[in-house]
Length: 115
Length: 112
Image (tube, rainbow over all chains, first blue to last red; front, side, top):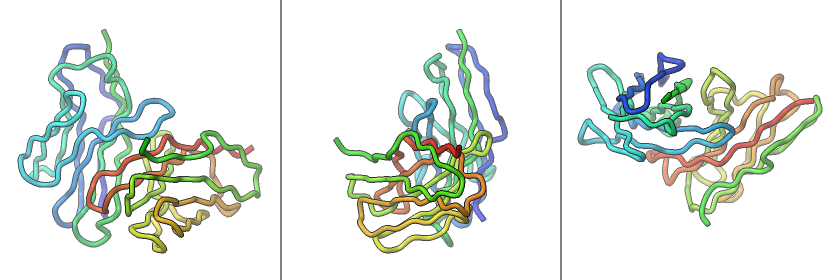
């Protein structure tokens, strides 16, 4: 069965500092990986995805993520955090074999950016 | 204005009643999904559908039912068999099973 782990319930960072939100995964076949952001009482917004190619993926709002196959990780990063980045972040994975149509999410990491 | 519309935004249900949550999309997407979100548990997949007239159970399908009679619609029924239905329900769709999913704004269901 495929799974996603987000080991940190919350990440705190000062505005202007770099941020990292961690994600590791387990899946059959090659992974399709995604990051989403959720603001209170709203749906999820797509940030970025890795399908194939360059291990460093750039997405919306200055976010990027690095795919590491050997460590089965897909950490979300941003060089300089903003207070407005404070939200709940979800990592998700699809496999390419078996029940490939299932999109499995992690439990989420709350990012708190302070002045 | 393209997108995914979930209705209603808030829904209250008495114990023992069935209730149906609406999800409509005008993005011409083939795949649609229903997730349940509880605090600290992330999103858990209830049902998903790759094409019209076809759907599969997700990880927590017990107490729920769906239909996919039209490409743009994927309603979810929460039955009285669902023991703990109070949650935030999210519908999503994607062009295919291999692409990113786009989400509606959610329905918050409360059992009273």
